[in-house]
Amino acid sequence: MAASKDPRPCSIADTLALVGEKHSLLVLREVCLGNGRFDQLVRNIGAPRDILATRLRRLVDAGILVKQPYSERPQRFEYRPTQAGLELEPVLMTLMAWGDRHLRGDGDRPMVLEHSCGQALAPVVTCRACGDEVRHEDLTARPQAPGWTVTGPTAA
Image 1 (tube, one colour):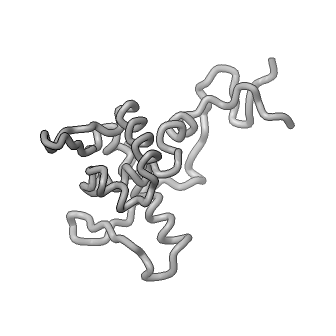
Image 2 (cartoon, rainbow, N blue to C red):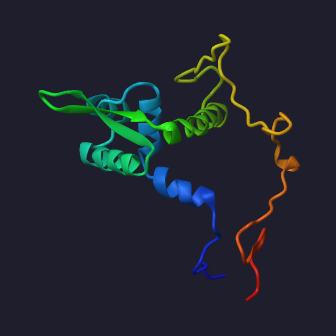
């Protein structure tokens, strides 16, 4: 079957268009850890400076990061997450937990996030309405985009 001229409208695809480029989520990781200066980002991510500058510009333009001066002479800036950026932090935590479980061996975690309760964070997705943990078998997709069903576009 040929690729659709108009793919499924999808918030996941729209979000990945902003943060799915190589290094973008790593920039957000570092900024959320408090490492928002350009040299810190270069060192901790390992991205080429020109690529990093492009990613930073895109994340600022998208409203995910804000660029703030920290030195007048010489003029230097640091990056901080906006509210929209902070709302992506749980995605980073969940990706990290998945990587720890599926890509690393037992006890081979390069970083542990400690919750304010004093325990290592084990993120879970819960339903805001009932508080239950979300499991695949409890979900029902209800497409809202006109002309689309769960299985694809409706016949024209």
